Amino acid sequence: MSKNWRYQQLSLVYAVCITLFVFLGVNLAAGDELAEGIGLIHVIAPDRTSVNLTHDPIPEIGWPAMTMDLGLSERAREQASKLMPGMVIQFTLERDPEGIFQIGDVQIAPEGTSVDAAKSQGEAPGSTDHDTMDHDRTDHDTMDHDRMDHDTMDHDTMDHGEHGHNMILDDEGMVMNANHDRLPEDCSAISQDHEFKIQVGRRYTADRPGVIYGYSEHEIHVEPCSRIKVELINDDSVRHQWMVHGLPRYLYPQGMFHLEASGGATKTGTFIVPSDDRTYLIHCDMAQHMEKGLKGQLVVGDGNGNLFSIPGVSGAMRSNVEDEESNIWNQAMVYFLGTSALGAVIVLFTSIGKPS
Image (cartoon, rainbow, N blue to C red; front, side):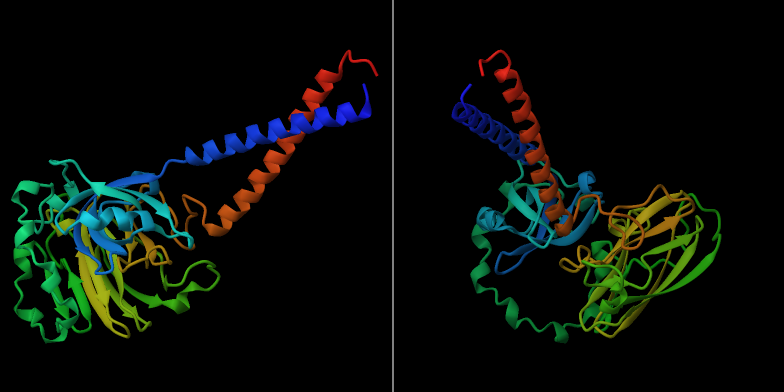
């Protein structure tokens, strides 16, 4: 076998192997399932870069049912041109270049699709009924949201109770669904009183690379049937929240207890937890604040396991941007070693019995 022929054979084998491995890698990446969800739209940003919605649980990424803001990808912005508040949508979640979840693709859900989390709110329909939506009478072009003077709105006279909320709202923030004395059905008495002072801001991110905001405590433990008083102190100049999800809906509309403090303000509220051993999600629902570090967990009794991506407590369910870059290099090394090994084996077998 001539040396040139051997080189040509080796080059051809390597080209075939590299093609196969690249094709395999692309298909594996494409097979990485995206998280999918169903949600009810409440508000669409004027520039259509984000939406506020209530979605059902998304188990793929460990999200319970909640109301939150989500950014829209470039594709989703084009797809969202016909979306309106009150519509039920189907969407996929993907990470943006900074590793933050956003809506990747979105479409109007089939008529009759329901959002169970929205049904319990009592303030919006839980299913899409396109026949009852009078789009022609809605003149969105004449609505000047920028001219609305929220400071002059008398929130004290608003009857929030008709929406199923127990809400106290003022210039310094909000307390929603406070509960001082009504026991959960499975509790015969208050087992223990707890008071927590939770500070929030940029200063609480030390030794936690990749996050912008932090709580002074990302995990708290209490006994079942405990009464919990939380004082939320906002050390930043921007608004932050401390929300607990998954509480009994017959006591807490939307299943949540909610503190919100304006920049530099402090808000205090009390709530009572049920008797079951469970781990509850704590987070800030301001746009992207949870993804940027404001996520925690409330462990009642023995809990039922750690939630994903709790700073200082648990690791991410999916890798962050730095991990993704590391994975790319690891995959490249696997492809290189794989092609080398496969190419060597093929050359070895094809050269057996050939004349030298």
